[in-house]
Image (cartoon, rainbow, N blue to C red):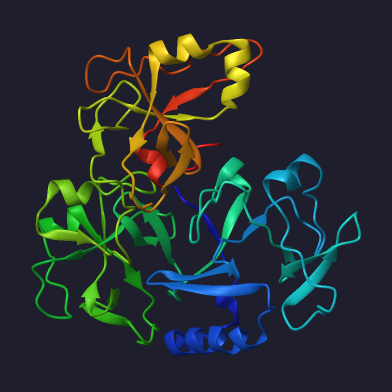
Length: 374
């Protein structure tokens, strides 16, 4: 699932958990001290750090020494450092990392910041989670211990400490829990410490017997027993009386996109059900080595977009000689003409060889929240 690294640490917040106001004040105060190269983008689930053009900033797990970048040479071609001006100076949580070429790079709390070359429009977060070491610089809303912000195909949600989705009941009319008996065998209350205090959007309700339960915006929180992995939302399919504790909308897709079952799992497809593929490699190299123009024309069709089409979510556009072509997370999108039935994935690995690694891959539904390039 989409991963994040915290920037404004919750450890700065007093144990009394008066977090909502402090969190707002925290970022409000920091906004005045932001370097001129940095901006903040607020969403219902938290705050992103971006450059002044609105492009997301990232941190790198292999940068383990404070204010020292290990992303050099080929790495920095893909992950350009956020370069500081000559007049920049360290202040507060903001420090400067000196790179090998003498330039200086902004770091926040010791973590150097980068952009990602495939983020082709503001607010894109295509690089989040790549290789499990790159993370968008994001601070989720404040939560009690044991509750976090996660990402599902339904959008950002509240999760427990293991990343499992939390739910609220649609039929509970008051702030008190009404789940009892058999209900509790399927829906496990998210328990709160007996010393927990109410604050902001959070409250701790009494379930009786000395047991307390967390509630968000007045709605008691539960975990569904059949959810096994982060991102699972099986409770939505199994009961119409429950909904996820959502913090925002699901990842948007173009109106023509459908979801089809396949032997690889659910894949994204066009309106006719034909699987959509992302091209991971350089097309000119593929033409030279494994599939020339005649081969491409016989087997592949770029996913065309009408003039005037606008990007949406993780879907953008690029200009080609033949017109506009859709891209997904920065990768050109194609249809494999030899696929016949909805959900066919015959183009997987097509035109790959010793000199060319996997070229086209089916766009799995999970890629809406997981990275394409792992």
